[in-house]
Image (cartoon, rainbow, N blue to C red; front, side, top):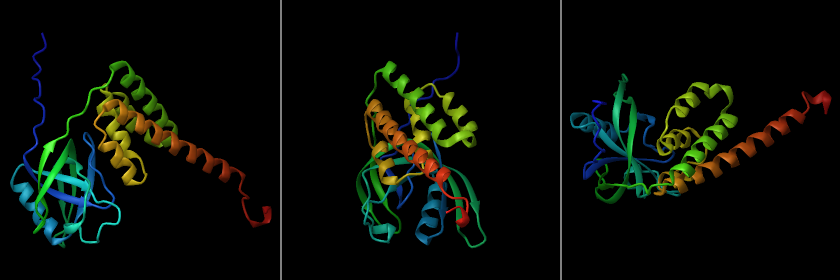
Length: 226
């Protein structure tokens, strides 16, 4: 008999502090490092830590104004909990946020002193287990070919994740691509469609990496070889 307690599903609060960023996305089951330096977000961090430590990280839309407070954002975001805080002498802080779930931002309640919004959980549409399992294997293979031996430990951890939905999120987070492409993966509700989009993205990145390697292999070693 298995006496291991079953963890109840995460229920996000109805309201959350929001950290809009121009180039970062918080996926579930990942760790996002952040540098908090603006006064309003230092205040946000302190108030989050006084409570449950939760904050929502959302990507700013393209062409957004420089002020994060007034920036238009996507409606799908990631909610996570601050797990580590390293305070710096200038009152800034480096923090780690552990992603927990996807959420939908319904509306902003306020923008100052830092954004607060009404949120609700984003439900994932289930996938065919056989198809999703095959996609997970394919994603791991593509990421291994793209990242090489330098990501061996990371790949081994991914291989140990049996749930294809959970395995896909760290792979998406680990890609160095346009964050707006990654946003499309974050906001896709269907697990199977999400994994297929990630597969196409990995295939495209792998083609570019192979092309670059061929170009570099044929390039002259120095000007005398030209």
